[in-house]
Every structure is written in C-alpha cells, then in structure tokens.
Image (cartoon, rainbow, N blue to C red; front, side, top):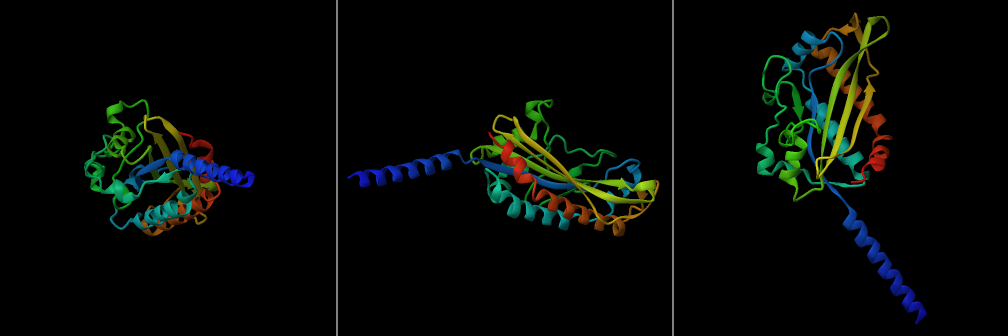
Length: 246
C-alpha cells in the first residue's frame, strides 16, 4: 500500500509540475524583422544616401539569412515561445497597419516605398516608440492589441550598419548592430538588446570614408552580419533568460 501511495504521489507531482510549466509558458509575437540600408557613420550623409537608393544594393538575402538563423538557432532556446509567423503575417489588421514613424529621414520619401529598409517577407515595418511617445502612436502597443488573442507580448528586431574607420582613416570596415526589444501586454519594456559585430574584411578609405559602391560595401555588410551572429550565439540566450520575466 505504501508503494502504491508513493507511486500515485509521484504521478500527481509530475502532472502538477507539467501543468505549471505549460501554464507559465509565455507566447511572444515577433512583429517585425528588418534591416536599415542607410549606412551610418561620421560624414556619411550624401554617400550613404546614394548607396541606399542604388537598386543594386540588395541586403534582402543577408536579412533573410539572419532571420532564418534567429528563428531556428536562437529562438528555440528562449524561455518563451514565438508565435507562428503565419498567425502574425496573415492577420488582416496587422497587414494593413502603418507605423506613425514610417517617414524618411532625409527628403520626405515614404519609407514604405521600400527605399530605406529591407523587410523579411510577411512582416511590416514597425518601430519601438517607448513611453515618451503617446500610447495611441506606439507600434508595440497597437500591434499587441491586434494580436493579443495569440500572445503575451510583442518583439521587434532590426539590424543596422555603420562605417568604422581604421587607424589613420586609410581603411574602413562595417559594424553591424543587432537590436531586439520585447514588450509585455501593458506596453512595458521587458528587455532591450543591442549587440555589435565588425566585419573582418576592410576596404581602402580616405579620411575614414570608403568608396560607397555596392561592390565594396555589400560584401562588408554580409561579413559583419556573419560575425555579429557568430558572437550572438553565446550571448543572446543568456541575456534573454536573465531578463525575460514577464
């Protein structure tokens, strides 16, 4: 009888713990994943603008590779589950949503035209407004309201690039930045991550500014992104696990 009671107690304990784990599992909707084609850096104004508008400057393959790595290599170890992309991208309200921040930084050209940003297929462009922005204008709040039946919070991810001059300004490389922010159902920031990785490859430069051609810069963006994600491999999950209590 004691053995039977012990076995039953163990079974109930396992069932209780399993139920508790399932009940505590949070679901997060990844609502945007994009990269900024406008390369930053000191003195980059006209040169960066020209490269951004060059139709041959195509960061989409680099972005798609980054997204695949993020969802298959990193996300599986997060202490929460990402909502299936189709649930997000096929939502009619999500598809028709337009961010209040979607305004070009230089000549008034609407970024929705696809000039400045490369966006993973199925996603819209969105930006974390934060508490200083009116609630009704905050993408993280509005997108959660659209998707609230399927998630406990929303995540925004983007990659941007910057020219990094070498010693003496006679060479330069590219630094890629990975930006990820998680917001809970109340519009409160759970965590934000900004990590960088510099390309191993370099190009000749004058005063720290290289020739801003597709042939010179695009390979550096790809190299920098590969370095960035290699470095993220050992960092991102540790940061998320320490911070993602929401």
